[in-house]
Length: 514
Image (cartoon, rainbow, N blue to C red; front, side):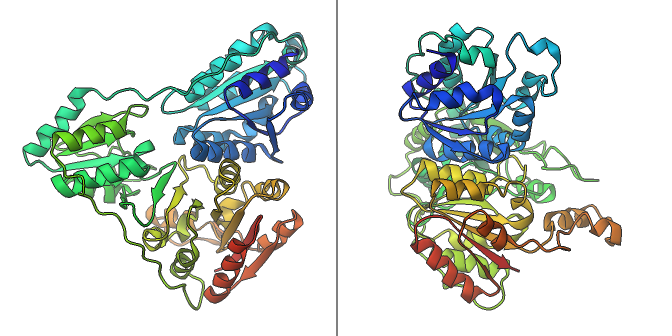
């Protein structure tokens, strides 16, 4: 078999059966091979940012890697922003990047580039396959690397001639590895601090934000007085009635420093020390004060849930300790569309098992508080700060979990980074409801302008901060890609449209004019 078929069969052997792709000439052998390998689901993205973001959302919800297929260096470069988000989310992804044939590389043709240089910053594992007979082994190694706890992007460069030449035998199946055990010394640090009555904060991310980890952390908090917070940006958090809720660590440096002043110990669980998102004049970048000792209880890739269980046992925490949320669904909002009235309305219609891909940015408002007692749901956040993730990640999540409704809460400006995801939702018939927060402004930039004390916004500067003139019309954009869409201007209409969209199969878009 040719090399492209070897790659596909190796992926299938390990259960990697979805490939998000935007192929070109150097990947045509791969496209042809899809017809010869039953079970592989190819999903086309009209822009590589959609390909990368969908693979990220898929991995977050499926707990296994998807494959991606990019066309040469420029195609990969188009996807780098959402690959950055995926890297920060520690999502397992197998990146396949086509390149010119090995004998064509020296000629500096128009699309030639240093593909590895583009791939390296977002890849935890990188290999250039220059021998087709090694494709089975190299693809298998990429799958194993992507799955290595806590998950990472593994990129395999595939020259065109390696795809069309004989590729050897497919690689054997890869079994998902187990997380590494937490060192006993790390547990002892917690036990010692708790027994000494010292003030402790747990900062949690990763798989600890699933059901088991949340219950264990809540039990520890109630019984020992440890304060538990979720990291500021999380790939996936389980939320809703029956689960404990966690407050998020503050984003802005002055808030974080003020918080940490009240603790003697900061224990990190599947995360790293908190730092400021941006630098600001007269604000620190490093947020932990000198008197607050930093400890790694469980590094990313370690068995944090097992460590929390061990702590509960060592500290004699009762099994019935903890504070799960009761089912509390607010009444829908009324009147004008504001962040609060939209939050109330979303919470009022949230279905059981929903997956929320949230990139509301400045319109988030009371959304986390309003939805905390809703029926059980999963919440995906913008992890790397690169805008334009929600629509693509929502599409990937819907493919990973076709039996669950997906709700994309998307700011209008950020959504324009990859609106092509709407087309993929329609093409694949995905059960996604898209809610666009249409304030027609880069409001986050207005906020940052104020934080930097830059004074009044001038006429020229305003042209870089607002996205009106002309106003975006998301309902027309969606219909142009085959998606049913509507516009609403008050909370009552929003409630009606959300209920309708969530009750009907397939994708829908609602543009909330704020």
